Length: 137
Image: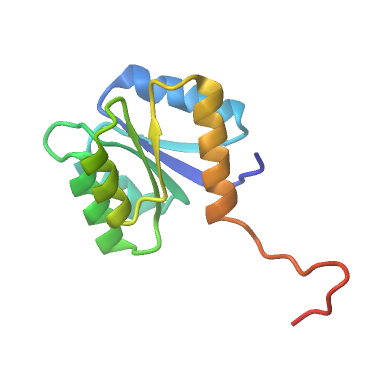
């Protein structure tokens, strides 16, 4: 994965933030911001404008869907990947309808999480390069 951007990691559980941070660093991400709840995530997003947000669904005070709504109100183009250990079809559908780029189970094997994240980054941050045989537009 070749991603030089920054990521905001939002989860109320410190051990999950640590695990995901280690995984992201292993994937080559150097700039990682963390937040332990939705309110702090919004503050960090406004201050740092990370390229991607990894957002837990189930958090106290302000859950992931509420936080996703707030982030999209601030920046409709923000890229958000939802994280959860519960795969509820209704929640997945709502997150996608609200504009989530992907939905990753945090209890999946690390290589599956890494692969899903890399695919999301490739899709959302793909740079269209002219084909060598095609004239520039």
